[in-house]
Length: 320
Image (cartoon, rainbow, N blue to C red; front, side, top):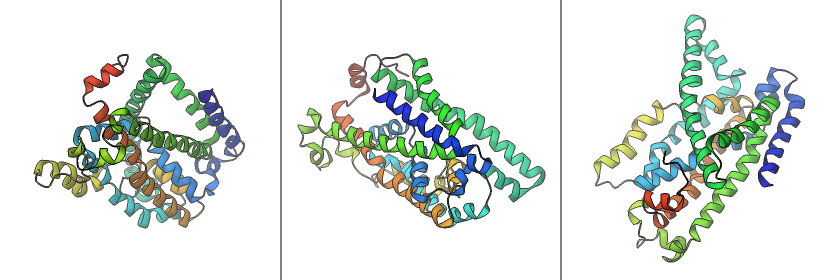
């Protein structure tokens, strides 16, 4: 009943948005350039909350502790540059997509080559890689929760998205993002609460015992890598801060913003709303959202200290 109601709401959002999305290209791709900062900001952070994101953060914490998250926390540098420099410039440009900007910026054969290269690289290679990881996560969730085969997980997880995104354009996507993100964050916080209530966690004093100096996972709790271990400091802190923040491609972390983050800045009411949306995105993305996942990851190290213990608890899950 919950799942049917969820898909019904998402499809209803797409239907309502479709009444205005078909008026012209600006309505379909930019929501009429009238979107407020708070809605765009939530939509941005929802776009980086894929089915595989909690799994990724959990694995980072299980393998190398909380400090391992610096491999992506370092991107906050470019996030702040986007907020205070590039957000207003994207909105001021009045283009419809980031690819249109490249045509205006470079012009001629160079611009055509750049657009073609980005389309092939991001649309074919990068997107296939990202969608593969997301789809694998969907399959694992479907197997754990419902025991259904992989093809059904993919079918049910995709069909609703295709319908509402096609019907409602960007406005439908943004409102669906807001609805789905609200549910996802509630679920993440509730999952952290459930993790803390496990008997193994309660036996050591609950959350305070798990995060205290006498915790059985004390070696995983440091936010910064051990300064005495040079290899960890280099891989977790120096390289991300010195290199990755400006060299990586990922929407919101890409220097200047790009992709679906730029698309939402372009849809803002004005430059002030574009800046506000990007600032809210960075705050939620780096400072708020990962902590429920981190708590779940730390609790899992106590409840399921090895992969074999996880396999024993969920024997029906495919190993890969």
